[in-house]
Length: 136
Ligand code: CMP
Image (cartoon, rainbow, N blue to C red; front, side, top):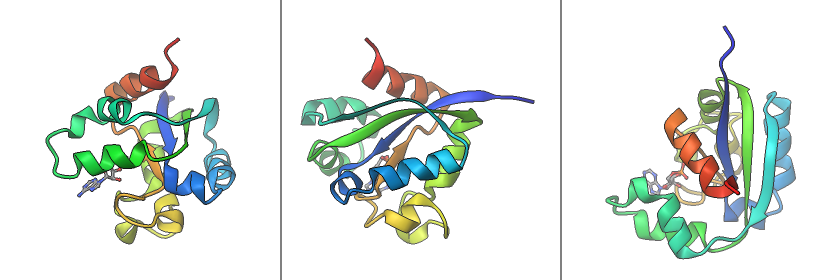
C-alpha cells in the first residue's frame, strides 16, 4: 500500500562546510527521495532553540543550538513512500560510530553532534519542522 510522506531533512553545518551538500543530496536522489523544496539558510541561536525545543530538557540542548546556528545549513522537504522511516534508515544511527555501513552518518558524520544530517522522527514532527522552515 502506498504511504507517501514528507519529511524535513537538514544538512548540518559540518557537512555544508566540507562541501558535502551535493553528495548528500545525490544519496537522497539515488534512494528515490524527491527533493520538493530546498534552501540554504543560516539561523540564529534563538531560532535553533525553537527548532530543537523538544530537546530543551536535555543536557546537550545548549551546545546543539549553538551548533545548528554556527554556520549555513541546507534544509529540504523530502518526499517518498514511508519517507520518515526511510530517511532515518538512510541517515543511520544518531552517533556515527554506531551507524551502519553505507549510511550518511557513517560515511560523513564526525561525532554525535557533528553528525552531518537531521531528519524528522515522526509524522507530527515532520509537519511542525517543515512549517518551521517553509511556511510562507
Ligand atoms: P538530530 O537528529 O539533529 O537531533 C538532535 C541532535 O542532538 C542529534 O541529531 C545529535 O546531533 C545531537 N545530540 C548531541 N548529543 C546527543 C545525545 N547524547 N543523544 C542524542 N542526540 C544528541
